[in-house]
Image 1 (cartoon, rainbow, N blue to C red):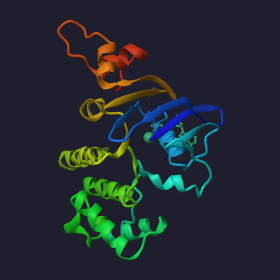
Image 2: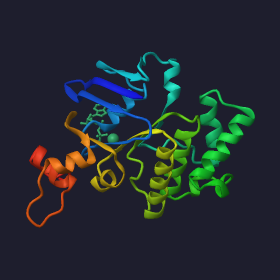
Image 3: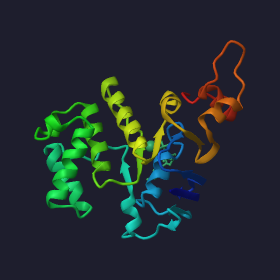
Image 4: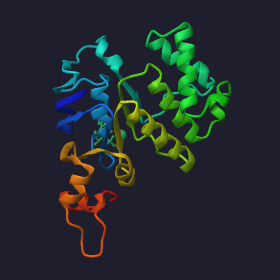
Length: 247
Ligand SMILES: Nc1ncnc2c1ncn2[C@@H]1O[C@H](COP(=O)(O)OP(=O)(O)O)[C@@H](O)[C@H]1O
Ligand SMILES: [Mg+2]
């Protein structure tokens, strides 16, 4: 469904993303795992068409995405790392605004808003000002905004940072549901336990480069655990890079 070939992006002399390739299939959650500054946000921004790559291309169902108005962009949703919400407005008015950006209106928009607010558990807060929401509720509304136009491919950029455990679990349940509906999910995080819990495939990225691309099971099996230890992504990352992901 999504194929990313040899993406590269430099900011001045800093190569933030260096020859990154990955593929994502329907019903699959791909974990893009890497420490802060690894190039995760730059990668998803290029896939979403918000940032122009220096090199490489993004294919959706075999078609190359290019240009600002390419209709293929509609197939992709992005839940950005930085919250993109209007604090003074309620969820319904926030979503009306985002729907308008996708040319949605009328009954179709009203139904879509109702559906996504129900999915993320905010239907009963539809008319309350977002400024009074907890961090977790804002994150869930951010997710609703990314889903509003019903994209086939949803990218979530560190969606659980600053989120309480209850909202975090609610987001994970939403993602399991979306997977079961055949959505293709690209999930960036620096939390290994999230990848261990949810990912079908894992791409590990460090200093802009892909250092591993495997199934979760394959990746864990690639590094034999020390005697008495469980296989872990922590050990995999340490073996691949010589340091801990948390450093
Ligand atoms: N707009 C920008 N201008 C200059 N450098 C940037 C910009 N955005 C990101 N970077 C740098 O590019 C690298 C990758 O950043 P980013 O993609 O945000 O990583 P991640 O999302 O994995 O934390 C970092 O070194 C970051 O400082
Ligand atoms: Mg980031």
